[in-house]
Image (cartoon, rainbow, N blue to C red; front, side):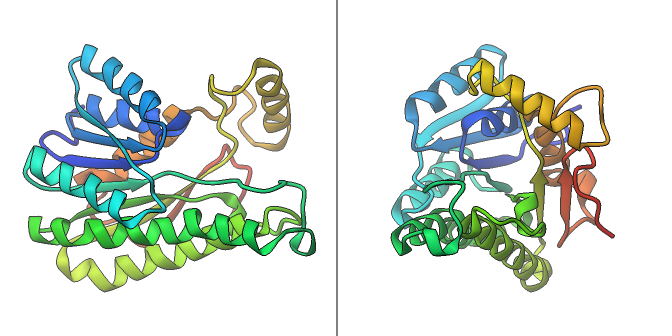
Length: 253
């Protein structure tokens, strides 16, 4: 399928999931701009996509820096003539993942919110004007089940993801009149090759025990499939939603 044929998509944040997003969007015909602070990793992903015939530009993008985000958006517009979609995918898990609120320093909390919430705001503010000028488009945010499942740890991360849902719904309701759709994907545990083998095996065992899908664990391709759908015109009547891709780990009305 070429559901994204001719569209220009900025993917902010690479890694395991981001690489899958870029590969799927390019395979669906999009012109992709892939950005991450790990420029070597981004260039490696881009090289593979070009080998497969895809259209992609790699760039360094620090999602927590306003100037860096603006430069990535400007690159998409100058290279491909406009911007049709944005998938904000980066995250920071700074600090000890086992700490509670009283165990964390304010510097750790601020660092998490700076990337995981403020960074999403910066990307949205930069991308909206060229998308509105283009006549509309789709913004997708990578969220987490932490946004709505009570957890005794990672409080700053969970707070940021909950705030991200509020941001998404604001964009969907405020800028729908401008042709903008906004949705979030909440992945479950997604296993990919960047994890060491022993950690990956433990994650797979834990995930299969906790989910309804028992035949396998989640992979970057699962998030990429949902992302490509939400960025495409096939999802033209879908906005303001959080879609969980987690094998049934969370069940919500």
